Length: 225
Image (tube, rainbow, N blue to C red; front, side, top):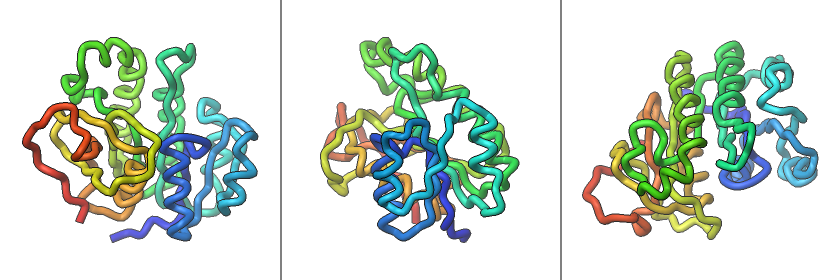
């Protein structure tokens, strides 16, 4: 088993990405983060994260951040936009990261998208699908580009995100019918456990809290061990 010790993290300024940053630095791993805005730099540097200023939408910025003498063992991207964004980074930003990860010889790429992407579209209610469809299309393109890249990948699709502390009840499943809520801190723990899990290689997994399912459905839990 390879041990990912140098991690390139995109999306660390907020949300799931920030929770992942907290978790990785608590494990004393070397984390480099691409940061578009200066506002979070001091907070991330205080966590001993190496910050590189740049925008994932700019290929030159991504090259400068990733093609260095120091190897990158794994890339984790939580890059994503909102339905209201005129320019959504979900596909073009992740495409740049994936393409340069190939050139950098990255061992694993973990992409965080959402339930409703690709073949999990049927898990969403018509109302949720209508609200999120423009973003989900971009996320699907990012997923497909990663799968086609030849990189070892894990795609994690969380359900509805909440900001409360981790519950420890979050699970992964390959069942594309499942939908529910999950706390961001729990998503972060699942993502980080996937780093060194060979079981998670080249898998697409939905992430939910087993106590916050929208409908009670029998399903198989995915084991990372």
